[in-house]
Length: 165
Image (tube, rainbow, N blue to C red; front, side, top):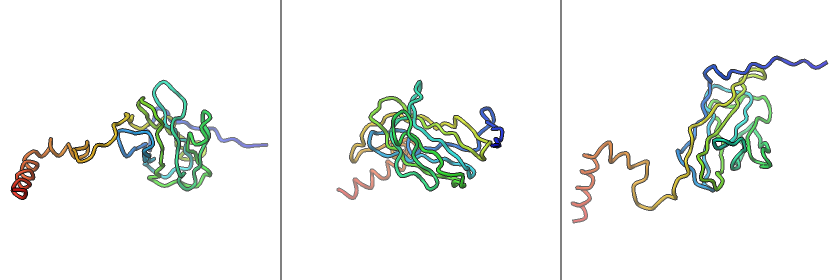
């Protein structure tokens, strides 16, 4: 006779974990780092999706220790799941390769603290498709400096003119 422990899902209770990404945009073929951040956990199911679809997008690369690929919607690397119930780290990072899509993408996780205690629909912020990087001009990362510290930027420009003159 098998014994089953009643499962406890916490859909309305604040989650202990966050799904974090290393960027706000994606480009086809350029890997994105997705991190499950929070206390140690034993189980995970992690997918990339677009609004209005339950199909897994893109492909996961190099599963973290104690995790493996899971075939979803015909994609052999469509999701990441746990390979065992060993504890996974407090900030376990996964690498995801985006497809050629124009729709915003988000990451959806189910995280299991224990066999029968888990949270579903732990969702990341949405990523929009970005433009290919240009050379030598301000990017989103350093354009903020011009907005936040215009005097410093003006001083740097003045020094550049003096050096080049």
